[in-house]
Image (cartoon, rainbow, N blue to C red; front, side, top):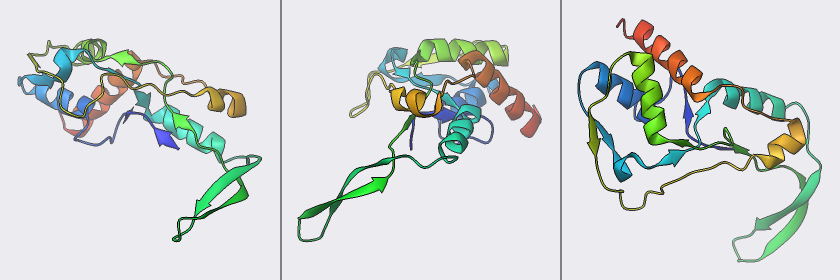
Length: 160
């Protein structure tokens, strides 16, 4: 499973949502690389957990799997596996993400617009067609709702 920008309560403190909420509440500016023109396929933890559970409920049909050996040769085996992209199937512009945070927090962010970082990509997007076909997956958490859930958790957890 390849997860795309999972966010939500108990998330990683180094991820954008966690950092942005902390900084906005502290009155500090937030750094927006590529001048905020990134798009990310944000995936709420509830959706990620649901798809993870759903994919473990059945074994997929066997598909060819290349197994590489140390001698640089390979064997083709039939193995019951799938590779899934886990995402919302809908990239969100970073500025729209920040607007959702501002609304949930009730404060405007001071934005520090910076150039694109070396090695960063402007857009990520999860092609979830195989999830739709195999388990009828559809994310159910809109970005505004997911951000609000995170902010509610953050304020309760950090007593703010």
